[in-house]
Image (cartoon, rainbow, N blue to C red; front, side):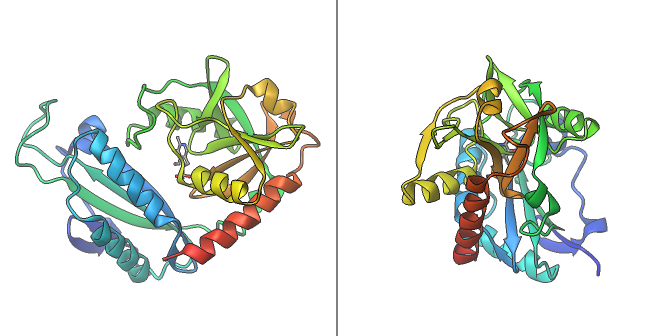
Length: 285
Ligand code: PLP
Protein backbone atom coordinates (compact mmCIF):
# COMPACT_ATOMS: atom_id res chain seq x y z
CA UNK A 1 0.00 0.00 0.00
CA UNK A 2 1.26 3.45 -0.88
CA UNK A 3 2.27 5.50 2.18
CA UNK A 4 0.52 8.84 2.58
CA UNK A 5 2.08 11.97 4.08
CA UNK A 6 0.63 15.36 4.95
CA UNK A 7 2.20 18.55 3.58
CA UNK A 8 0.74 22.00 4.17
CA UNK A 9 -2.94 21.16 3.84
CA UNK A 10 -2.72 18.16 1.47
CA UNK A 11 -2.53 14.40 1.88
CA UNK A 12 -0.09 13.15 -0.77
CA UNK A 13 1.85 9.97 -1.60
CA UNK A 14 5.11 9.98 0.40
CA UNK A 15 7.17 10.18 -2.82
CA UNK A 16 5.41 13.46 -3.70
CA UNK A 17 5.70 14.97 -0.21
CA UNK A 18 8.18 17.81 -0.77
CA UNK A 19 9.19 21.15 0.71
CA UNK A 20 11.39 23.92 -0.72
CA UNK A 21 15.20 23.87 -0.39
CA UNK A 22 14.69 27.36 1.09
CA UNK A 23 12.65 25.93 3.94
CA UNK A 24 14.14 27.19 7.19
CA UNK A 25 13.83 23.76 8.72
CA UNK A 26 16.31 22.54 6.10
CA UNK A 27 18.59 25.62 6.15
CA UNK A 28 18.67 26.48 9.87
CA UNK A 29 16.93 23.64 11.73
CA UNK A 30 14.45 26.43 12.50
CA UNK A 31 11.65 24.08 13.44
CA UNK A 32 9.99 21.95 16.08
CA UNK A 33 8.85 18.34 15.96
CA UNK A 34 6.74 15.86 17.88
CA UNK A 35 6.34 12.10 17.77
CA UNK A 36 3.21 10.43 19.12
CA UNK A 37 2.82 6.66 19.37
CA UNK A 38 -0.08 4.82 17.76
CA UNK A 39 -1.55 1.74 19.40
CA UNK A 40 -4.48 -0.12 17.81
CA UNK A 41 -4.97 2.81 15.43
CA UNK A 42 -5.16 5.43 18.20
CA UNK A 43 -2.84 8.21 19.34
CA UNK A 44 -1.17 7.78 22.72
CA UNK A 45 -0.90 10.63 25.24
CA UNK A 46 -1.42 13.06 22.37
CA UNK A 47 -2.69 15.93 24.52
CA UNK A 48 0.69 15.92 26.26
CA UNK A 49 2.56 15.94 22.94
CA UNK A 50 0.42 18.78 21.58
CA UNK A 51 0.89 20.79 24.80
CA UNK A 52 4.65 20.39 24.45
CA UNK A 53 4.43 21.35 20.76
CA UNK A 54 2.60 24.55 21.70
CA UNK A 55 5.21 25.33 24.34
CA UNK A 56 8.16 24.60 22.02
CA UNK A 57 6.88 26.78 19.17
CA UNK A 58 6.10 29.53 21.71
CA UNK A 59 9.69 29.45 22.96
CA UNK A 60 10.96 30.22 19.43
CA UNK A 61 8.12 32.64 18.53
CA UNK A 62 6.81 30.39 15.78
CA UNK A 63 3.06 30.51 15.12
CA UNK A 64 1.40 27.16 14.42
CA UNK A 65 -0.33 27.18 11.00
CA UNK A 66 -3.24 25.12 12.40
CA UNK A 67 -5.01 24.93 15.75
CA UNK A 68 -4.12 22.06 18.10
CA UNK A 69 -7.55 20.38 17.62
CA UNK A 70 -7.08 20.59 13.84
CA UNK A 71 -3.56 19.15 14.15
CA UNK A 72 -4.98 16.19 16.05
CA UNK A 73 -7.63 15.69 13.36
CA UNK A 74 -4.88 15.66 10.71
CA UNK A 75 -2.85 13.14 12.75
CA UNK A 76 -5.92 10.89 13.05
CA UNK A 77 -6.76 11.26 9.36
CA UNK A 78 -3.19 10.31 8.46
CA UNK A 79 -3.37 7.22 10.69
CA UNK A 80 -6.62 6.29 8.94
CA UNK A 81 -5.32 6.90 5.40
CA UNK A 82 -2.26 4.75 6.13
CA UNK A 83 -4.34 2.04 7.84
CA UNK A 84 -1.79 2.34 10.64
CA UNK A 85 -2.38 -0.04 13.54
CA UNK A 86 0.83 0.24 15.59
CA UNK A 87 3.58 2.78 15.09
CA UNK A 88 3.96 6.51 15.30
CA UNK A 89 3.02 9.82 13.74
CA UNK A 90 5.87 12.28 13.17
CA UNK A 91 4.99 15.93 12.81
CA UNK A 92 7.23 18.89 12.09
CA UNK A 93 6.53 22.59 11.87
CA UNK A 94 9.15 25.01 10.54
CA UNK A 95 9.30 28.75 9.99
CA UNK A 96 8.63 28.13 6.32
CA UNK A 97 10.42 28.95 3.07
CA UNK A 98 11.54 32.55 2.49
CA UNK A 99 12.98 33.89 -0.79
CA UNK A 100 16.58 33.71 0.47
CA UNK A 101 18.61 32.81 3.53
CA UNK A 102 18.29 35.62 6.05
CA UNK A 103 18.92 34.52 9.61
CA UNK A 104 16.33 36.86 11.15
CA UNK A 105 12.68 35.78 11.03
CA UNK A 106 11.05 36.52 7.65
CA UNK A 107 7.75 38.39 7.57
CA UNK A 108 4.68 37.13 5.74
CA UNK A 109 5.99 33.59 5.37
CA UNK A 110 3.62 30.74 6.18
CA UNK A 111 5.06 28.04 8.44
CA UNK A 112 5.53 24.58 6.96
CA UNK A 113 3.61 21.70 8.54
CA UNK A 114 4.41 18.13 7.54
CA UNK A 115 3.51 14.74 8.97
CA UNK A 116 4.19 11.12 8.15
CA UNK A 117 3.66 7.78 9.86
CA UNK A 118 5.81 4.75 10.44
CA UNK A 119 5.07 1.22 11.57
CA UNK A 120 6.39 -0.20 14.86
CA UNK A 121 4.96 -2.79 17.22
CA UNK A 122 6.03 -0.99 20.39
CA UNK A 123 4.23 -3.30 22.83
CA UNK A 124 5.77 -6.49 21.41
CA UNK A 125 9.23 -5.13 20.55
CA UNK A 126 11.82 -7.88 21.28
CA UNK A 127 14.04 -5.38 23.15
CA UNK A 128 11.27 -4.96 25.73
CA UNK A 129 11.90 -8.55 26.82
CA UNK A 130 15.69 -8.57 26.62
CA UNK A 131 16.48 -5.00 27.64
CA UNK A 132 19.08 -2.89 25.87
CA UNK A 133 22.67 -1.90 26.45
CA UNK A 134 23.55 1.79 26.42
CA UNK A 135 26.81 3.63 25.93
CA UNK A 136 27.73 6.99 27.43
CA UNK A 137 28.82 10.01 25.40
CA UNK A 138 29.50 13.65 26.28
CA UNK A 139 26.38 15.82 25.93
CA UNK A 140 27.34 18.19 23.11
CA UNK A 141 23.97 19.92 22.71
CA UNK A 142 22.89 23.55 22.99
CA UNK A 143 21.57 25.13 26.19
CA UNK A 144 17.81 24.92 25.44
CA UNK A 145 17.19 21.18 25.34
CA UNK A 146 13.71 21.76 26.75
CA UNK A 147 12.68 22.92 23.26
CA UNK A 148 11.92 19.99 20.95
CA UNK A 149 13.97 21.45 18.11
CA UNK A 150 14.76 19.58 14.90
CA UNK A 151 18.45 20.44 15.45
CA UNK A 152 19.41 16.88 16.34
CA UNK A 153 22.98 16.52 15.06
CA UNK A 154 24.45 15.83 18.51
CA UNK A 155 21.86 13.09 19.01
CA UNK A 156 22.49 11.70 15.52
CA UNK A 157 26.19 11.34 16.40
CA UNK A 158 25.42 9.93 19.86
CA UNK A 159 22.98 7.35 18.54
CA UNK A 160 25.30 6.43 15.67
CA UNK A 161 28.07 5.76 18.23
CA UNK A 162 25.59 3.58 20.14
CA UNK A 163 24.60 1.69 16.99
CA UNK A 164 28.26 1.16 16.05
CA UNK A 165 28.89 -0.27 19.54
CA UNK A 166 25.88 -2.59 19.26
CA UNK A 167 24.00 -0.61 21.93
CA UNK A 168 20.37 0.48 21.84
CA UNK A 169 20.76 4.04 23.14
CA UNK A 170 23.36 6.63 24.14
CA UNK A 171 23.18 8.28 27.55
CA UNK A 172 24.51 11.80 27.39
CA UNK A 173 26.74 13.03 30.23
CA UNK A 174 27.34 16.56 31.44
CA UNK A 175 29.24 17.60 34.58
CA UNK A 176 29.48 13.96 35.65
CA UNK A 177 25.71 13.41 35.53
CA UNK A 178 23.39 11.77 33.01
CA UNK A 179 21.25 14.36 31.23
CA UNK A 180 19.10 12.03 29.09
CA UNK A 181 19.20 9.50 26.27
CA UNK A 182 19.65 10.48 22.63
CA UNK A 183 15.88 10.18 22.23
CA UNK A 184 14.68 9.10 25.68
CA UNK A 185 14.45 10.02 29.36
CA UNK A 186 16.61 8.06 31.82
CA UNK A 187 15.59 6.43 35.10
CA UNK A 188 17.17 4.26 37.79
CA UNK A 189 15.73 2.34 40.74
CA UNK A 190 18.03 2.73 43.75
CA UNK A 191 18.84 -0.06 46.20
CA UNK A 192 16.30 1.44 48.60
CA UNK A 193 13.57 1.39 45.93
CA UNK A 194 13.48 5.05 44.93
CA UNK A 195 12.73 5.74 41.27
CA UNK A 196 15.12 8.52 40.24
CA UNK A 197 14.92 10.63 37.08
CA UNK A 198 16.52 13.96 36.31
CA UNK A 199 14.45 17.04 37.12
CA UNK A 200 13.01 19.02 34.21
CA UNK A 201 14.76 22.24 33.20
CA UNK A 202 16.73 23.55 30.24
CA UNK A 203 19.20 20.60 30.41
CA UNK A 204 16.66 18.03 29.18
CA UNK A 205 13.54 17.64 27.09
CA UNK A 206 10.48 17.29 29.32
CA UNK A 207 9.52 13.81 28.13
CA UNK A 208 5.79 13.14 27.82
CA UNK A 209 6.31 9.47 28.71
CA UNK A 210 8.54 10.49 31.63
CA UNK A 211 5.79 12.77 32.91
CA UNK A 212 3.13 10.05 32.66
CA UNK A 213 5.37 7.40 34.27
CA UNK A 214 6.26 9.71 37.19
CA UNK A 215 2.55 10.48 37.76
CA UNK A 216 1.52 6.80 37.45
CA UNK A 217 4.26 5.74 39.90
CA UNK A 218 3.30 8.43 42.42
CA UNK A 219 -0.38 7.45 42.16
CA UNK A 220 0.69 3.98 43.29
CA UNK A 221 2.62 5.41 46.27
CA UNK A 222 5.97 4.45 44.71
CA UNK A 223 8.78 6.77 45.80
CA UNK A 224 10.02 9.07 43.04
CA UNK A 225 12.88 11.56 43.25
CA UNK A 226 13.54 14.06 40.47
CA UNK A 227 17.28 14.76 40.55
CA UNK A 228 20.41 14.18 38.51
CA UNK A 229 22.30 10.90 38.89
CA UNK A 230 25.72 9.66 37.76
CA UNK A 231 26.68 6.59 35.73
CA UNK A 232 28.32 5.16 38.89
CA UNK A 233 24.99 5.46 40.68
CA UNK A 234 23.20 3.82 37.76
CA UNK A 235 25.69 0.91 37.79
CA UNK A 236 25.07 0.46 41.53
CA UNK A 237 21.28 0.60 41.07
CA UNK A 238 18.77 -2.25 41.20
CA UNK A 239 17.37 -1.34 37.79
CA UNK A 240 17.72 1.20 35.02
CA UNK A 241 15.32 2.06 32.22
CA UNK A 242 14.43 4.65 29.62
CA UNK A 243 11.11 6.08 28.52
CA UNK A 244 9.94 7.62 25.25
CA UNK A 245 6.90 7.71 23.00
CA UNK A 246 8.44 5.08 20.74
CA UNK A 247 9.63 2.57 23.37
CA UNK A 248 7.25 3.34 26.28
CA UNK A 249 9.26 1.90 29.23
CA UNK A 250 12.40 0.02 28.18
CA UNK A 251 14.84 -1.80 30.48
CA UNK A 252 18.54 -0.87 30.32
CA UNK A 253 20.64 -3.91 31.24
CA UNK A 254 24.17 -2.62 30.65
CA UNK A 255 26.03 0.68 30.54
CA UNK A 256 29.30 0.86 28.59
CA UNK A 257 29.40 -2.95 28.61
CA UNK A 258 29.00 -3.25 32.42
CA UNK A 259 25.85 -4.99 33.66
CA UNK A 260 23.18 -3.19 35.66
CA UNK A 261 22.42 -5.59 38.58
CA UNK A 262 22.11 -9.11 37.05
CA UNK A 263 21.95 -7.77 33.48
CA UNK A 264 18.26 -8.60 33.04
CA UNK A 265 15.15 -6.39 32.98
CA UNK A 266 14.00 -5.91 36.57
CA UNK A 267 10.53 -6.31 38.10
CA UNK A 268 9.92 -2.59 38.68
CA UNK A 269 10.69 -1.79 35.04
CA UNK A 270 8.36 -4.56 33.87
CA UNK A 271 5.64 -3.35 36.25
CA UNK A 272 5.94 0.28 35.12
CA UNK A 273 5.85 -0.86 31.50
CA UNK A 274 2.59 -2.75 32.10
CA UNK A 275 1.12 0.20 33.98
CA UNK A 276 2.10 2.56 31.15
CA UNK A 277 0.64 0.28 28.44
CA UNK A 278 -2.66 0.13 30.38
CA UNK A 279 -2.65 3.93 30.71
CA UNK A 280 -1.86 4.26 26.99
CA UNK A 281 -4.73 2.04 25.93
CA UNK A 282 -7.14 3.71 28.34
CA UNK A 283 -6.36 7.25 27.19
CA UNK A 284 -5.80 6.69 23.43
CA UNK A 285 -7.67 8.96 21.00
N1 PLP B 1 14.66 13.19 25.51
C1 PLP B 1 14.97 13.42 24.22
C2 PLP B 1 16.22 14.15 23.89
C3 PLP B 1 14.12 12.98 23.20
O1 PLP B 1 14.43 13.21 21.92
C4 PLP B 1 12.94 12.27 23.54
C5 PLP B 1 12.03 11.77 22.50
O2 PLP B 1 12.30 11.86 21.34
C6 PLP B 1 12.67 12.04 24.89
C7 PLP B 1 13.53 12.53 25.84
C8 PLP B 1 11.43 11.31 25.31
O3 PLP B 1 10.31 12.14 25.18
P1 PLP B 1 8.86 11.52 24.94
O4 PLP B 1 8.59 10.64 26.12
O5 PLP B 1 7.98 12.71 24.94
O6 PLP B 1 8.89 10.78 23.66
